[in-house]
Amino acid sequence: GDRRRVMFRVPRRAYNEMRLLVAADSRAAATNAVTVRMIKAVRCHYVDATGHVPGRTTAAPRPGCIEATRLPVQAARGRSGGTRPLWLLRVPLDPGAFQDFLGDPRERYLDLDLMTDTGHKGLHVFAATLVESPVELKVVSDEIGHIFTEPQVPRFHCILRNTTAAAQTGALVVQATDYYGATQQVEQAYQVPPMGVATQTVELPAAVRGIHYFEARLGDAAGQPLMRRQTTYAVLAPDTREADRDSPFGMWSFGSGHYGGGEAPSIDLMRKIGVRWSHHGDPAQRVYRGYHNIVRGFGPDDPVESWLASMQDKTDYGHWSVFAEVAISGRHYSYFPTELLENGNPMALTPDEETTFRRLWQSAVRASETARKYHPDKPLVFGNGYPQFIWTFLSRGYPRHYFDGLALDFIGDRMSMFFYLREVAKHYGYGEVPMYITEGFYLGSERGYYPSRASEDRQAMGYLRGYLAGFANGMKAFIGACEVWDVGGGYYYTGYGPLGVCRRAPEMNPKPAYCMYGTMSLLLDRATFHSLVPTASMCVYMTRFDGPRGPVYAVWTADGSTRAIRFAAEPGRTPRRTDHQGNSFPLTAGGDGFALEAGPVPMW
Image 1 (cartoon, rainbow, N blue to C red):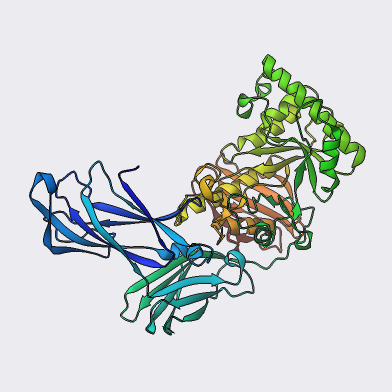
Image 2: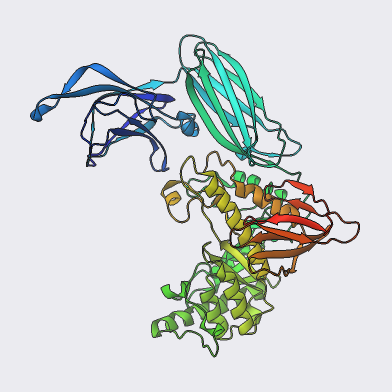
């Protein structure tokens, strides 16, 4: 086993403190610290708390523990002889971070993990006990993911459960912070009868739209902290979107896979920000299933009937895909298209790659012919993977009548794939073919129960710039781009983990990227990409879209700088600036027209 760790299971309760009887070492190299981890195994959900003990001569405890009390006894050193100080260490725990597991009657226990550094171990743990909060705090709302749409007023229910045989009183303090740092605070007194339950309802009228950060702090009658609960919520603009199946906006959802929240919650979350295509669908909510892969096998001997059987009940899908996540070989994920070089030729295939390619060609032709014969009205998107796979077919003259679009699936650090596919398609005479994103284009934020706001801001910025780059490079629709929520389990700690615009199930609360997406789909409702606007700068990008209400522009800087942008407007028109969180205000004209500051986060 791991000598640094002691793991044990305890009954499922809201423990807010662990008390440890420890002996401290005074050696300079010793690490006088212990970490208590609350962990949900398999789900890979954990929160750490660290307690420190002062050295032999240090009087004050280090930050990170409520109290470190030196006891009036000494601990024997064992074989080495002598004694060392004995301490009572109180380590604060964070049961609010485990609200959804502690409140689930199907859960029977809580895993705890004690960790020290064996290499420089300075603490020796003799005993441990857990302290249960006399009042448990659970925060819920009536909306999935805490998503509120104007004119709704954000409303939370703070459920207090008394775990003792005596009445409990104290104060509940709720603070909400908007994206720009402005805060509002609500304080309420509470009283909970013995072993009883009370509910405190808190309303938080929002002054601005976008992401908000919520914290509830529960104190006892003496003002001592008992529990806290942190989460996020979103305030969205009214949904006036008219686009339906003509919308370019889609999103991937694993549904219940990887410990997700299920199909119905994902559809609800996506609908509220204008998503029209996904892996799951509900036509009643105007969310439609995006595509279905009709290639069942790779080879000329695969029975056509298997494709027919797979298509009979898939007529409600918006698109059928020919292949999904297929490559000829491992090197067909990242090589540069040599066709774009002067006098360049396509990369030659090895004999094994040539054999694989011919099998795939035959599979694609048979699948496409079958689909065209029985369902000629169903659009076929080809490739659905990395562009290197697609352009190998294009270089061999893959028949144009076998597909209606070319589709990509790639990870988010390779935005050049938009450009590569477009340019190679033009090179081989397929420049007029529409292009799609059927899955992928994933960007992650920081992992953990308390990810940094900066990392989630970067994710929102990256997704928005990625969408704009895709539109500028000819993407017709993003059928399954990005992900509705972070996945759970071990998959969360891979490159495909914290990719969602919401955090993990079961809470599925929003990140800034959620509000970014809703703002984008609202402003670009039934709009089409028009052009890149010249800005006379290599660092300032501007895209124009034309919609029913007139032109819509997005502007940002590529180098992280802030640049002043000045422009004129048609007589009688007053342009409005809207940030990625959905807050808008009119611009005021000066002597030389209108002006605004462009930065790395695109604004509208």
